[in-house]
Image (cartoon, rainbow, N blue to C red; front, side):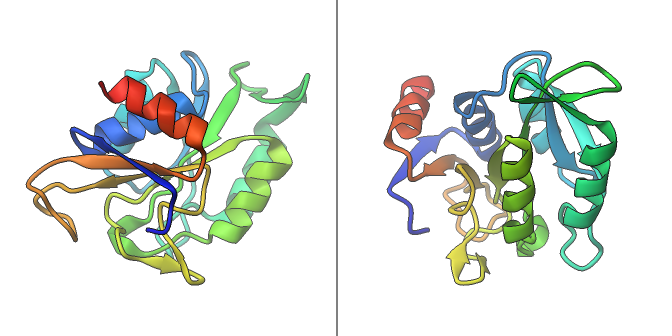
Amino acid sequence: CGVAHAVAMVNGTAALEVALRVAGVEPNTEVLLPSLTFVATPNAVSHLNAVPHFVDVNEQTLGIDPAALRLHLQRVGESKAGQLFNRETGRPISAIVPVHVFGHPVAMDELLEIAASFGIAVIEDAAEALGSQYKARQCAAIGLLGAVSFNGNKIITTGGGGAVLTNDPNLAAMARHLST
């Protein structure tokens, strides 16, 4: 995938949970997810006692719709002390998880720009997209962290397993520590 670090995990759900945790997702924060995803994505958020916050998807990519996301965050988002909060719930919004559904890459450039403008981390769920590319970049290697799965129904399988991918050596070390 062209990243500096790949940390093996027991499965893709654990990879996503660990990636979220090392990215700073804490209990009682919200994580933005597409409304079209597999249950493992919100489960990884819930396992951290965080709250899944579903947003609209684009019918072409099947992933988060950047235009709808920007409008949604402008409506519900409120910046306080450099952190984005949901003004409806009062909870911080800590991350966004684009899911590359059925190997279809999400419009990552737009999502990265939105995430940067609101100060939230991007963790890619590429469980179904190992080998897929977005503008010559491998899915799972574009955001701060990525999670892939090697389950029996995936593109590359080991019968089970997953991995956290990142270029950040400190995040990789934290993920490796948590995986043991």
